[in-house]
Length: 150
Image (cartoon, rainbow, N blue to C red; front, side):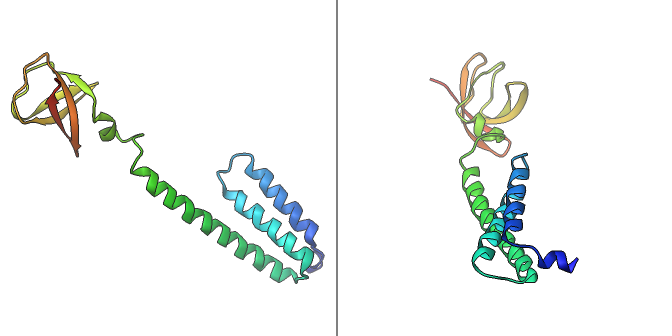
């Protein structure tokens, strides 16, 4: 086994890197991308600098951890920034600005309105008659703030 490990050269690392990148093409969501690039880095480094097989594997591990961590940090900050502006799967953001026809009289204060196939708790400053279009202007948790559409 040690004879095999000592016989590994830069071509082996480059081939391993390409194989890992090929596996990434199957749709592993980035798991093999950074391993493949790390193996390629070890192969390139080994081309110019002779290293023992132990140092090769340590370099591969370090490169894999560093590249994965850098990507994770970058993606995490991008996702965190994007969530505040995204409305997908956030019903409360999708409801703001929606117009709803009142099916029954709505009292001043709190009441219930039907939006789509769901009834919601809503609040209004003034009473609104049935058959009037209202606009959802704000969502606070599960309470909609509505006002008569003019």
